[in-house]
Structure formats: structure tokens, C-alpha cells
Length: 424
Image (tube, rainbow, N blue to C red; front, side):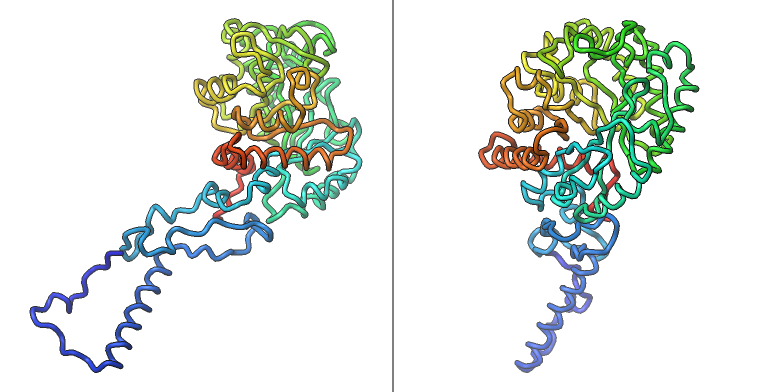
């Protein structure tokens, strides 16, 4: 530590030597002064009560500023080493706590209290299933959110696309199939109508919609085992899908709901529905011209989150895209520059098991590949599945199969999409 020289220290003659007790008192006073200066100039990390505080049960990283040798001190300046960020805070969390934040657990919208223990343990999100939401869903979700450790917020998501893919239209109003919107509504009309629905979703405490679908399909059929899109797609025209997708996305954001653009890199023309078995997209060379532009448009318009499909992409490897570092880290993150939240499609899909992965193993591979949040289907024992996924992730970090820095990065993206600032 370098302190500015006191004016008296510049004198040519030394000050008179003090008696022993006085010298000791002077030394103690100087030490106290230095300590006071450190407290003024540095953040001591004292917890403050706020909606974004870390809360009980969350260990925080010690501040580097507490060591005098860690930086050069000047009055009124705080060293860059003491800067607080979400990353520095998350570095103090346990691997288990970080792992839980990357998991979205499924629950029936009629019994959301069923995942109270998972929310209390720190999962990052819940995925609502059903076709008719209870009238008091908002109050039930408010109670559920009260169990989040540190009150850091919770991603409450559902599939509210329009047409036959709507979970809570009885509460928020109905939208037509995207194919109808793309053919009959202008982008302005799409945004206006989606905003109305989004405002009611937000009022019911649902803050994330797994939509819009920006796959370029255009086939005039209902979605099925052999065709995952059909009417879920706005059009078979890339330009129409790009404009409609951005309009839908902006409508959700205007209503206070986080959109999740899906299914990267595009399901249009897929060989099969990955929920029911192995599926392949069009070749990567074709997707780059036809399927990727709507995602590029969404990213340029500020897309906060993107879902990656479980389809194999010919030309990008042999694993499903959700488990592919080439698809996520190299293409989506690297070449396309996406910096938001990357979520997987359901890892319970038959395409995942056909590729040789259990749900926990797939979760680890997804995180290694660059995804930030993993999902699985309702069915079976949700509590057991959640625990198995978290354990697989922590074991992967312990063994070096998954880097801790990648896990921290994923957790950071989960917090960022909710605008949670741990240092507030």
C-alpha cells in the first residue's frame, strides 16, 4: 500500500523522539487512520437488505480489497480489484447452488406448490404445463416466489405461442396460430395483440414465454410427430418470419414478459419431431440461407433468450444441437454474437435418449456446449430428477469434465435475463 506523504515528513530534521508509551500510541493512531481510510475507500461487503440481496444460505466471495497488499491505495479511489459484479459474487457460491440455478423444473399450472422444495433449493425457473390455468394462478405463483433464496427472482415460463399451443388462454386471451398471424396480420398488429396477452401473463406472475417460433416452415398442416412446425411457423418465407418473429418478441417485451426465440437453428423442413425420436434439420448450408436470418434479426432487435433444438444439424456434427458446442458456442455465441440466455428444449425428448444421453448426462453436455439453462418434461418424480441433474453437474465440475467458470457463466446468464444484480 502506498500512502501519500504527510507534509511533516518532508522536513530535513527528524522530529524529536517520543517516550516509549507515546511512540506506541502514535503507532496505534496511524494504524487506525489507515484502517479508516480503507473502510472509506473500499466496499467492505456488508450485506444490505434489498430485493436482490443474496439472502440466507448463500456464501459470498471475500473481497480482495481486504488485503492491503492486493492493491495500491489512494484516498477517494477504489481499486479495480474491489469491483463487485455478479460474476465475483457467484464465484463465492457452492457448485450445488450454481447448478440449481441452471435448472428449470416442470410443474402443473394447477398445482404450482408442488415444486416449493425445488424453488427453496434454488432452481432458476419453473415451467408451467396444462391447458387451463386456475383463476388465482398469480397469487399462487407469488407465494411460490417467496421461497426463492435471497429473493433473487424466478423465471416462470410457459408455452403461449397461439393456436393449439396455449397453456393459459382462459386467463390471458387467445391468439391464433402463428401461420394465421403471418398471413393475415401486419407486424404492428402482431405486436399489438401479443402485448395485450403479455400484460395479462405478467399480471398472473408469468414472466417468460417460450415463444416466438421463428422456424421457417410454411407447411399447411397441424404440428405432429413427423412435422414439429406446420401452423406453429409464421410462414415459409424467411423475410415474413423475420419480421413477424421480431414483432411477436417486441410484443411480449412491451407487456413485461421475456421472450424465448426458438428453435435454433431452425426446425423448418425437419425429418421428424425430436420429442418422439431422432430428427434432422435441413443441411447447415441451407439453414444459413433460409433458417438463420430470423434468428439474426431477433438478435439484432435485442432478443434476451434463445432456445436450441434437439435436432441433429447435418454439417454441424452428430449430436443434437442442444448438446453441440459447434452449434451453440461456435455459431450462436461466436459467429452470431448472441450474449443472452441460451436454454435447451426439453432434454426428456426421445431424440436425446436416442443419442445415448440420460437427462442428467445431457444437462452436463448442454452446459459444456454453451447452454445456460436446461429443461425436462413433467412426469415421473420431478424432485428426484432435479436432484439427479444437480448432482451430475456438481460431479462434472469436481471431475473436471465441466469447468467451474462455465457453470458460473451459465448462472450469470440466468440472473442477467431477470436483471438481477447481486451487488445492489
